[in-house]
Image 1 (tube, rainbow, N blue to C red):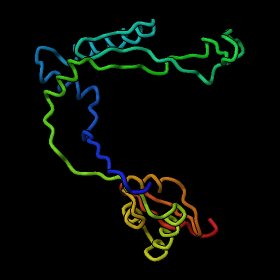
Image 2 (image 1 turned 120 degrees about the vertical axis):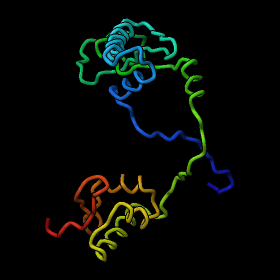
Image 3 (image 1 turned 135 degrees about the horizontal axis):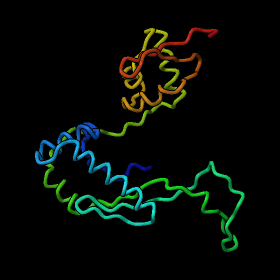
Image 4 (image 1 turned 180 degrees about the vertical axis):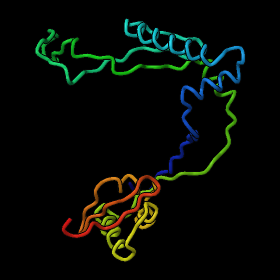
Length: 202
């Protein structure tokens, strides 16, 4: 607040892509030619099915080299709450029928962490800084409207540079309907999307 502290720096691993099941299986087969893709896929599907059943029975399941799994419970807001179980006075009364398995907890096996570390050759990449615009949202909208009145069309990068925002923040803000002295609308999708002023009376 008083600009007397230090800037905090965090390291983050760059993620390149998400491997789908088919691609992951292909890479497993390449590293272990003893197994065919169908065998690997069959084993994984069987393991997934049995894992779901066992954690549903209340078991923690430990798979060596991968980790330990357990079920997480949460409320199902769509279920009726007419029947209530009695708890001590002053607590919210709920019934077990209101609960569902809403997630699966996972704790990585140390062997998996060590193996990942052994296979990881880290080097410093670029820097990404948090940027906060010096303009309010209302001011950013009016600046964009003025830009559009002069230029006719605007891209996400234009909005980011105009208002001192990161590209991601600019894209997120432009994803909502922006209304000021005029209304900003869009055409196209993703990187090809452009923004312009909505004609009056529309």
